[in-house]
Image (cartoon, rainbow, N blue to C red; front, side):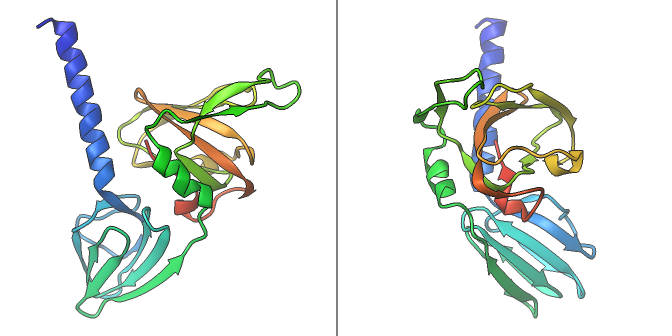
Amino acid sequence: MSRFFKSMMMAAALLLATGAAQAQQAAVVEDLSGAVAGVEVFDFLSAGKTIALPAGTKLVLGYMNSCTRETVTGGGSVTIGETGSKVAGGAKLQTEQLKCAAANQLAQGQAGKSAAMVFRGQPGSGRKRAEIPQPSAVLMYTAPAFQIVRPGQLTIERLDVAETVQAFDVTGKLFDYGKTGKKLDAGGYYRVELNGQSTIFHISMDAAEGAGPLLLRLVRF
């Protein structure tokens, strides 16, 4: 077996492992006050994980499969489910249903498929007619937040209008575009790429400016 073929096989295995890990991720830690062992802000949590909450702890979770935001206050414990949490030992749970774009559910169902749409670009855009793959997410705010699996250079490319590609060196668990002081355009279609992985996302025409609840602006690879 050639060295090149071995390298390709290893890269494919890494991508499969990353995809499997993300498929199991159910919730993201949006906010945390108090010390909680093994949990930090912007951690992505898998279903089945149980977290011990000391007295006085406040944990805010965003569930990606149900578009719900939960606030858990300790002490006690919280167990992560597929679409929501279960609490025990005196912990209290408050749930808020967010208004995700209906198209977002369709986009998630099409992720990884060959579906595409024909888009007529804006006059003078340089892209009068182009095929754009079905987006994997529809965002309700103009400042997206990108999950970072490992450090690298993240690029954002506009697909429906000719614009300069934006590039950022990113580290940590999440890159919050809003903290750059910039915003993307409502109605725009974009491709984001990091470490050889890419995904398409769309900013809703009804998107609010700036940053908002993480679930309404989260992009995962």
